[in-house]
Image (cartoon, rainbow, N blue to C red; front, side, top):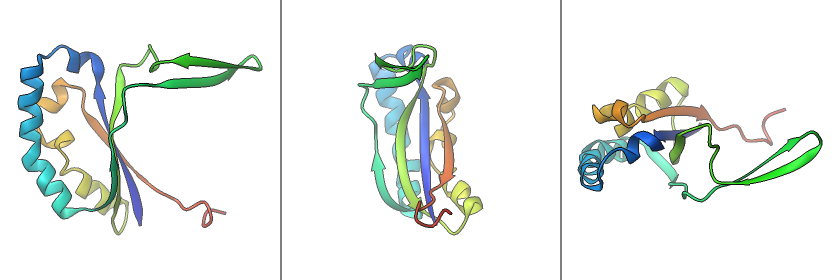
Length: 124
């Protein structure tokens, strides 16, 4: 089965740290990332850019907005498609990611979620 790993971070919390501190934390991510990518069958990985455009319908009109939702400081940091036998195995594998392996994760508002990917041709 295919699963989507979504990693999140809190922009405000990340911005409170110096670049030197962030670089050091990212360096500490390397060992758990090596384990993560060794144990998972990753099919693709993306890191969304910072530029954002939003749209929604309100009172019958489409509203276009630039930038992330100002009411939310949480942003997507990574999107990873990988294979696992079932959701339980997918979660066990996803827990190897630095999001749940580093003590700094809480400080920076890191969290992850795993979702099964359903082929629309098979979902009826």
